[in-house]
Image (cartoon, rainbow, N blue to C red; front, side, top):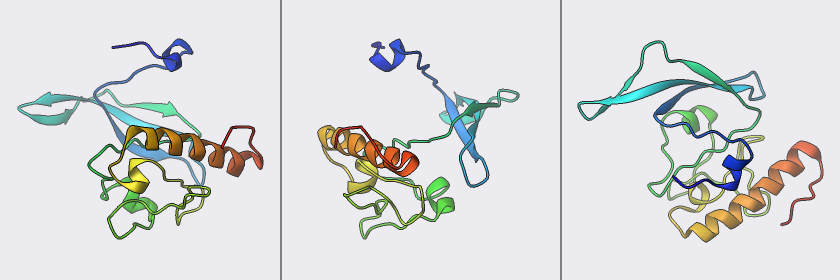
Length: 139
């Protein structure tokens, strides 16, 4: 796999990992995860491989098939648009749930990667403004 700037800055790639639970009361503090392997065409959790990733912000990359409603989105209670995408506005990308943002394919549905990049950058600014009150990131 190609090394990107995020990896040069110390980001680690994790493969075959399943997120079990978001940790934190009112604020995210981490993700509880478990390693998985494929057995007979099905994903199986690896016993004893549980671990927690510290986090104060989570971004979900949902892909072209649209957001999976069961699980995290359902638990968060975010409003969906008529097409089943997570409803978020284009000004600050806020959803119907406080401090939950939606952009890219998750918000607009299947589209071009350039739209996902643009919205991702704009959403990052909106998150920065929500957390810090102001942002120096470009819009």
